[in-house]
Length: 333
Image 1: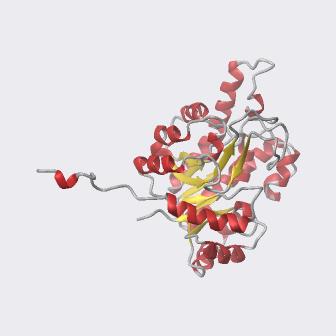
Image 2 (image 1 turned 60 degrees about the vertical axis):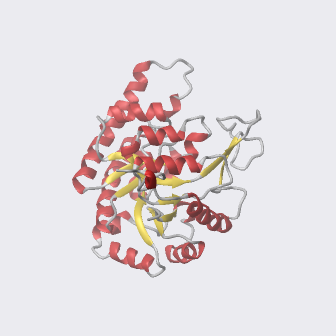
């Protein structure tokens, strides 16, 4: 059976869910990956209102759609981050509170546990999101960064996230980190360190998204192969990078997406340089049978055109694993 093709609603949170659901069905999707912002999915209401989850599922089913995962990237970001005024714009008011950094981090951790409870009530088993990082700002090591500072950053991640993951495990929910710049894990090497820091906690895995790895020069197919048993969810997003030297390199030069001086930019699925043929084959080898969720981002394309095109492209790219050898007819057993 082909994997379901879903649309992540995070980039569509300006639209009411009912409006987006109608559009998504028209675009060609099987379901939605619900973002925990806008009116798409309210964690607090899902936990306190016994009918909320059923109503959300009925709202999607009315349009012939299903839900396989929810995502709370924005709150997850605040669990480990060095909190500043930027976070107020992405966090619910009850998580931001008075803005005291440690208080924000603690309330964010509590909200991530509440998100697992909400997922359980909705009937899904995967929560996608970010972790934040106390050490991302130390990425380029000058002035020289003592090794102990980096170790302390991974220890901080373990201290803050292990209780969250313990709660997830008790609830039968898995947390899928979208490995991504600004998170505790942003490439293969940092992912290995993050896993070691939490003693390979069984509730911790990954929302695989090749677009955040490829432009860095990270082997995104090797990521699937190395962490095959921890690929809990998949984002289908493409990225383009230049074959020539550019004015704004991998770090982006403080330019905006779409700036022609950039070395890389996100693209609609099939419009960048990600080798999705290799991705699908690696996912098949890994035994991943979950949804392929389009996270649509392309600053140079109309989003409804792009979402429609992406749904069709993902269906064209996907294929099931074989259940037999191609030359089995010649087997003389």
